[in-house]
Length: 467
Ligand code: DHB
Image (tube, rainbow, N blue to C red; front, side, top):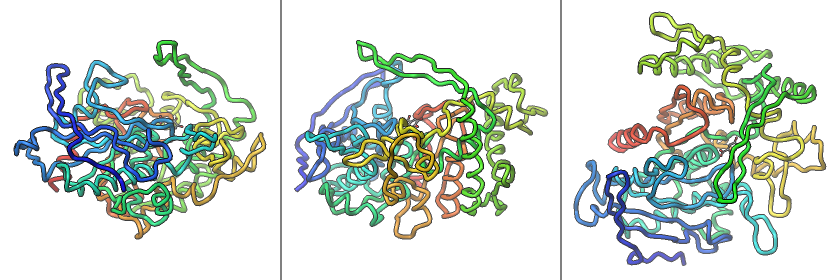
């Protein structure tokens, strides 16, 4: 039996930046019956105290309040739970959990297993598909206890950034799909539904087995790379040092080969824009799909101009009468710069975070693309095809056996270089094809990051909950 004692809560008051919130906190609830890792397969739930007093917040009551479900997964590492507090990355402001509670949402923060976890025998216990299995189990737990705490389990909205955004996108695309059942049964997840109402996804690092080709298509011809290496100081603070370099001749050859693979993939998706125009690429990577991406960047620049931003130094933009009317895409890509060498995700020497994510119980690192397995520079094996499949929402969006979220919000900063803009664009288009309502935008000048626009995120949630 999965345990839940509705009397095991603490009533807390938290004041941050002059704002006070009162809530009941349920800490450290293990959300499955047979956890492989009790630290990570647990969650905290926070409920505004007002809902126990018969009051409402922003028009929500104990019955109608949405359940906001942020995850803290990054880099496909384990994601811990958290509590209302100052923001980890920006301690000048309250974190997302605090803001969501203040807004009137019930907040569930599941911890989630990740790629680095091992059991006492040294077996890996957090590799793919662990993260999506855990999030599903956490959603099922919320339905299991639905009668015991406030909040509407038919209004669960997941939220995450980067690998966490990928996780949110996967939760939205795969509700109740039988592929995940054996894994859920193994950990003793509740026998309820894991469908969600809506998915909020910031810069989702998803569609990993096509992310290398998409990256080289976008960054074709840009061969200098720039990124930050993060290490931990003795005081356990992140320290960043720049890594700048030029891709080798060999890496340039790999880049060209990967870029050549992308058009066939895009064309096979049979994507169409809102006017029904087919979005395709020719063998040189040119075509209507590229025009679609350019248009999204122009829309982004247009919104920035409308908000009064001065973009006159962005010489790759053509601005006429205050409107962004054209873009030199190659110049734009050179300007935002490349972050990763080729291949960007499935490293030929198995050194990427994604190689680690696709390991299995006994093997730490594996390939997940034919290209990198064929061209591997180290002894290697390919991840199980079904597991690669289960980590990609694109495979489930058109599958009737999946109960899809009705709503998505996708934000991918216009200068994000962790993955190609094509990745979020293809996700958006595939969802639209299946009549999912998607609020998709590339916020101008935003790098790889999330939760930077909580008032707009919450306004979207309020809109769709009333829809
Ligand atoms: C994340 C970033 C990456 O560049 C990547 O390859 C995987 C995950 C992240 O921030 O979660």
